[in-house]
Image (spheres, protein in one colour):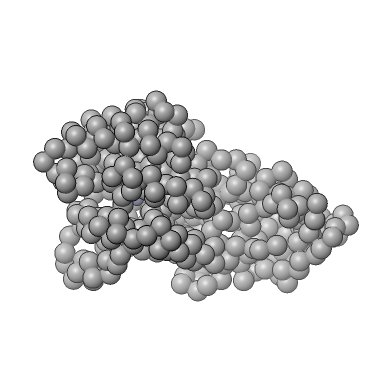
Amino acid sequence: MTTTTITGISELVTCDDSTPDRLGVRTDTALVVDVGANTILWLGDADHVPATDNRVDLGGRALTPGFVDTHSHLVFAGDRSAEFAARMTGAAYDGGGIASTVAATRAASDDDLRALIAGRMAEMRDQGTTTVEIKSGYGLSVDDEVRALRLAAEVTPETTFLGAHVVPPEYRDRRGDYVDLVTGEMLAAVTPYARWVDVFCEPASPYAFDGEESRAVLEAGRDTGLGLRVHGNQLGHGPGVQLAVAMEAASVDHCTYLSGADVDALADAADVTVATLLPGVEFSTRSPYPDAARLLRAGVSIALATDCNPGTCYSSSMPFMIALAVREMGLTPAEALYAATRGAAKALRRTDIGRIVVGGRADLAVIDAPSYLHLPYRPGVPLVRALDL
Ligand SMILES: [Zn+2]
């Protein structure tokens, strides 16, 4: 066992949610980490640190749990920057551009995709993210979905089968056949590589799935032992949130358009289902932001994630999401940081990440500033990175 002491921490954000702001900020505190096991062994008074093999002095920088990005679509090839430019000059988003990414992704080799995923993962780590969920959904055939999840599983345990991302063009006139494929042969083939199943439940999009189709996808996934996640209520009011709550999904993501009944349902389900907000999507599609402060007041559990994808938000930056959540969605800096760490861990049903606790993983992010407040205070500045020990 190799042990390392971390000292010089100006502010340690533990995300101990028994504290008033749920961040559990400590000063004059040091950590001891088992580097090989990536586990926190000790946390206490910086003046009484036990003897260890190595010492890292952060020189007065803040330390937080690494960010937990619970929603990404990193397995893709191709380029859709022109679509973004068109949208910024007035074109609407309806989910149709996904087909162009599907074509480019199917055409790419395994090694091409591996290199693209690795590049995006490195970009995330350089911005403080230590856990990444990755979805399939740009394959949309049995072989291509299996490949996407096999490649994702090489880099993260948090893999999500999103065969029900859109109905691929070749099934446009026979949607039922595609749902049968997703819930049958495709599901059986991907299950060894997936922890979760997800569905783009969005009747407002002609390419996505309605409530009934979505329920079928989730039920089939649940029957094979996968956990449930839902893309819901992104483009308009719809059944996604209610379906996610009724089926005890771990997370329903987007939640841009919510009725009072949706908010009430999410509040009642706060111990089970997290509302994951993706403000980079609203930013990149120039859409109204969800009212995160209203959700917190109602008692809803929330998380923040990037939704890093080539169509609606090609940003890998959790610090940017924190800044948007504070500036545009009414969260305090403390609420936004919690939602990007411990709140997000809950959306993956994990207790070993998203907080700094003895026995938990030593997934840490160091901020080149004295306080975590600098994350939203200095948007766009590369202040935070995952700490390599
Ligand atoms: Zn998504």
